[in-house]
Length: 282
Image (tube, rainbow, N blue to C red; front, top):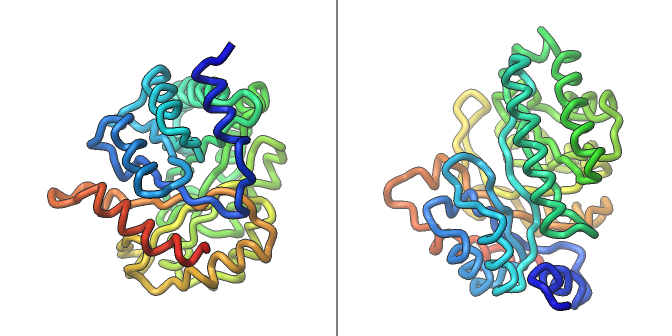
């Protein structure tokens, strides 16, 4: 029997995938209905979308299946926002949300569920005060994912407890779960003045997910930009990703610093990002 889910799975296997696939994060389209935003991304030329599960973002199992079946688009990932610096009660709530995200991922594609990705919260000072506790929290997250066989990707973030490649690698090795992988987003390291090739060599072997955006300023005064408005050489960026063995999604992320502005136009920005990146990928 042909079902909407069969259609989704068929879309994922109908053609040979390129090494790097381009997707747009619907975090940058929070103001739009889910079906409309996915349709627009399809028309622009993106191969997939990141579905945002944060409060205020349009979601829904049925609506998501309908939108994907209608467009034959793929889900690159599900975006959540958790913190490893929380009270036991806050952790309990987070684990419930994580179960929901993993179950949704499985419902979309049981054979190859999209990753769930999150930042790690906290402040730099929290690391020195309690990195073992942070690792314990993430071990609980990894346990939820392992029971469902869905991968969780965690991300270093400027100004957070986990803000450097070294901290992220320490956590990854400490947790030591096949269902915990890394997200690579150079914009946060750029604000700290870190070398892009060195950070790639450190993290890409353990990375299952890549965000792209530009940045200017410093760690103390970060300013995120849309792709192409900064100094990052995307041709070299993508060349290094492939050289180091990365194969998968390149997901365009628009920071809340940008999409929260009153004059923000999500369709125009999504198209502009695509037009800047697609020729480089090709």
